Length: 220
Image (cartoon, rainbow, N blue to C red; front, side):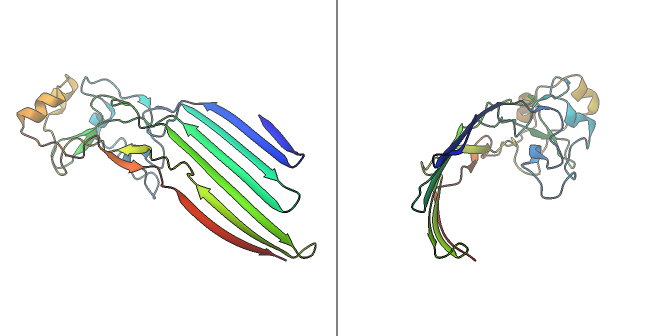
């Protein structure tokens, strides 16, 4: 819904339902928390990586799937040079998918319980506010002062969890035949005496804290 600027104000509201589904997280490798260089991730490096512990293909919601997204923007432009605006964003959390490394030396990450195995992170809730005062000296010469308050409510949602179960440089050892006949990952970890990483499924990423930005602009 869009209310165009009239009588000094405008507003826009939108709701999106979406579903990102598959077995490939894209060039930015969202399965690996993103990469600055595209298409160099570990996807499809080894056949085992595309299956779970039951030897079933791993398909499901991808790491950046936010099923529900609601946005609201409003602007009021006062006739005496003051402009105020608000932007509100509400979205469902991101899926958490655990993984464990298999085969020592190569340490192939396996989503052994499939995608979206451990629920989602918190709902993301953010309100941003903006205000500006503009002085007009001539038709072309203008001086504007503005303030931008980001995350005005101080929300602190968890946006990422540590998903790797085992400590670095450790992996479960199985043969391909054993894996494709089905395995019990937790029993293998216990039998091989492998240690769990203490960060496993703990929060490692949070919504950006409240920020205040001041600005000045001179137009001529």
